[in-house]
Amino acid sequence: MAERVDGLLRDKSRPPGIAPLDPELVDQVVVLTLKTPRQEAAHWTVRAMANAIGIAASSVVKIWHEHGLAPHRWRSFKLSNDKAFAEKLHDVVGIYVCPPAHAIVLSGDEKSQIQALDRIQPGLPLKKGRGGAMTHDYKRHGATTLFAALNVLDGSIIGRNMQRHRQQEFIRFLNAIEAELPKVRAWLARHPRWTFHFVPTSCSWLNAVEGFFAS
Image (tube, rainbow, N blue to C red; front, side, top):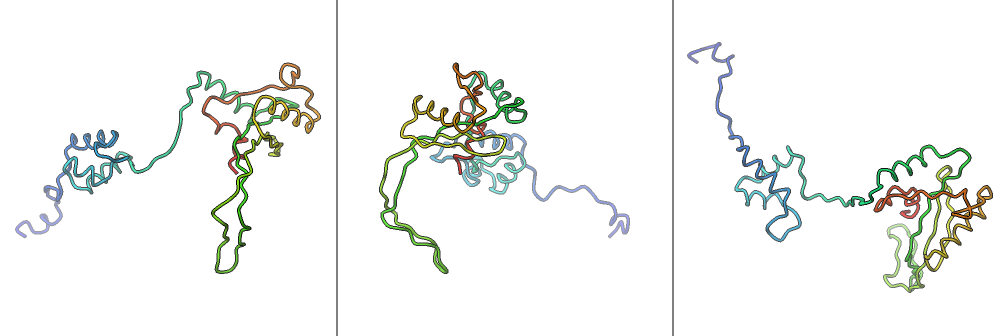
């Protein structure tokens, strides 16, 4: 009031309501978050970190947010140890994007141990006020192996079910493809028009036909 209007318009420096955290303390939270918890837990929680460091839980949340850390979230992944990863990657993607002229590009793979299950009783259909229902028990009718080849151009599938997945079954599958694609005359050493392009190790996501198996 003594300074009147000048004092009202001038913003004097004053200490903040909450003192900022010590940078060394922030670094300690970040480093500890990236390590396995000492207690029996899969990951750090906000309360566990706050108790370990001796700060408020809200401060832990702020530090994690500022550093992009979310220890409660998990995502599965596996890195390929294939020494020729880059070469194979470029080769397969190149075949997808720019296939050779007058060539049919097929993405082939096999899915083994598919169980053929049959419910003990017929299921009940969906109706108003009630969802579909089925018995919890079932009979096993053995397992089968699905061989499939995806035509990258039009998305069509050539598939065969076989009891086993040895080289004999694979050759039978190649012969089935040969019969369904008249333009193809040969495969492997005796059939030079067939060329195999292998995806890197642990990179099934690169194989286009995997989407068919997933569905």
